[in-house]
Length: 546
Image (cartoon, rainbow, N blue to C red; front, top):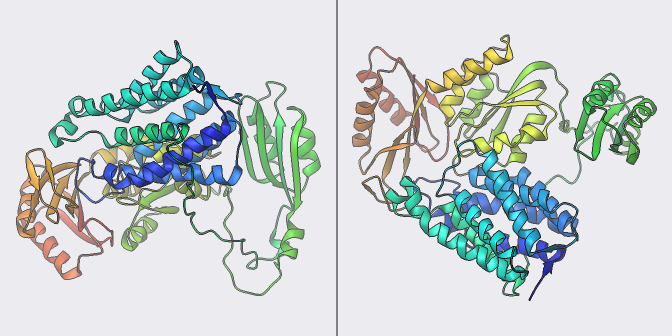
């Protein structure tokens, strides 16, 4: 009987969970309802978990609470897609519950699972049953029921796993979309895979050996493109304060902003972590001490470092971008898109930063956060442009000192419409309302291909067929593109559009796109019809109606 686990055991459980997700990635992907090419649930959950494994391998935490905190923090920043975000929330609640614990018994773990479910449900605006939320809730409920009477950690997980499997089997009946498609929930399947792998790790049936391949990173920044005298504030000053009073960190932030730039102040109930570039580190430290004792202090002379790193060289190079760009204006914007043409269009519309991603490549929370922080504005509007990226974007809100407003654009054309209505002179509330209103007036048709055989909503779909969708609903599947185009035009007539924008993808030649544009325009003589080379992957055409 095993009555508790330590940090090493929990770390191994997380590593095994990643291995299992990676091994089952394609199986989970194939449970997705629509057969369109996508990053898919298995891929998103695996990539999200890989972020935690990278940090665990790097930091080697040893206590239960430190392992849980490292895992939760990495998952939050590495979350991809809705399934990845929900997974990160489940672990965030667990870390909160396990705080201060060196080891954890069955009741501790059951309470942590329950807290994780609570955090996830609260974060999802409209929780849907028959999803990973249901499966995790039923698992936590059984874990708690066992732990209140028994103390064997392994048996507790056995009970949780069995309930999770039962709940997973029932998802097909709880969710009408799943029932029509005849499949169980993909995210729920991923959660079952995680629980099964964690139990296998405890029972010695799985060995923790996960070491995901990390993205290539630059070994060092290139400092050669600017001169030492261009560094306005010489001292990079960082410290952590142990809070001993109720003084607001906002006061500290306001004070620091008078003494330098690149100011970052992050706080919780116990500490205040601070970063600033300044010429007066002494005044900074003196003020910091009025909030509590200093736990750590680091002051580095950036001018001296720059000289030592060859900053006076005449060699060519690209300037490194500041981690937090100081505000130069009130409003800024970040858009997610893929394709050279789409990126060019968004830049022409005034978007400050582009996150490369979309269908088949959902960016992580950290990918989005990086571009937000590098946007030189006080308030940053984010346009996810994909329904599976909205939650990841929303997770950035508490992670940046900048104010972040996520406009829930589900398609790239909605993002384009929003940027066309980006009035930088408007008041914030007025601007938010205007952007949301512009998005609501856009309908988006997507043309792609079926990645696999499928049955959906009475449609028998064969791999390789053309697929047409409107606002996420399937219009039909076709062997012949001309038949698809006729069906699209027939559908468009129901909405009597005034503006039609046709974005053609990287696999469509310009002559073919012009033929499609001419055909559509001939059926809508009163509408303004525009053709744009978006260069987007996956979708042959994205067509917006307004």
